[in-house]
Image (cartoon, rainbow, N blue to C red; front, side):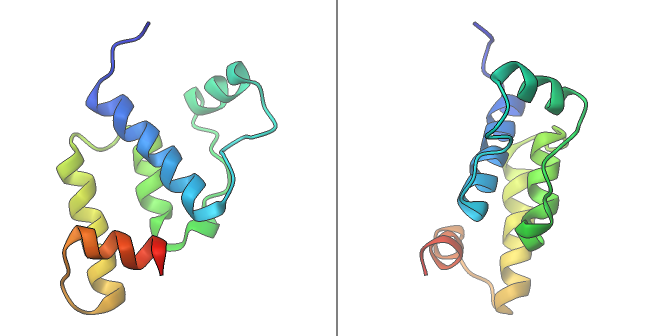
Length: 99
């Protein structure tokens, strides 16, 4: 069993964000082994449907974030730009995913 790291957690979070925003799992039609190979080669599903979150999911999958705080800062920037007012991350998540 592989050890869980910040990088692997953020990678998984990118997949969860993708699924929440698209309603589909990345590579639903492929086997686990095929999915692993595609991600290793950085052959990601089309991210354009994610809008402003395209970069965030791509960064999660490319393992560019060094910490969850770094990802959170980017999410807050996007949400603040979209709403033109600062808000808490809780309010941002509620607004983005539940309204």
